[in-house]
Image 1 (cartoon, helix red, strand yellow):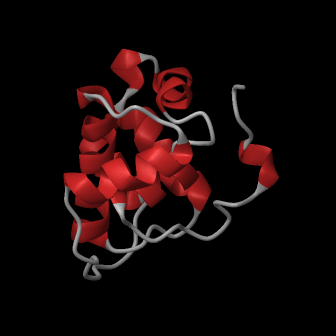
Image 2 (spheres, rainbow, N blue to C red; image 1 turned 30 degrees about the vertical axis):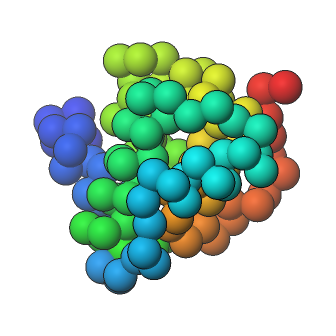
Length: 117
C-alpha cells in the first residue's frame, strides 16, 4: 500500500506542524559554510532550499530519521544519502539544517548519523 503513495505525499506523512523561521538569506548560509569549511554550490543550495521549504510548510520535523528519509526520497535520483553526505560531510541533517537556518530535529546530534570522512 505504501508504494501506491506518491513520493511527495510520503514526505508529507513524515513531517510535523508549521512554525516560522528566523531571517535567512544566502549571506547567512555562506557565513555558516565558512565555519563548517564548506564551499557552497548550487547543489548545496538546492538541499538548503528543500530543508527550508519543508520547515516552512510543516514546521520542525518530528525527528532526524524522518528528515533523513525525506531527504533520501527527494534526492534519490542524484544518489540519495551518498550524494547528500558528499555535500554535507558532517551530516545532511545536522550540517544541512544549520546552513539552512532551520531548527534541528530531535536526535540530529546522534552519533549514529556519522560522517563519510
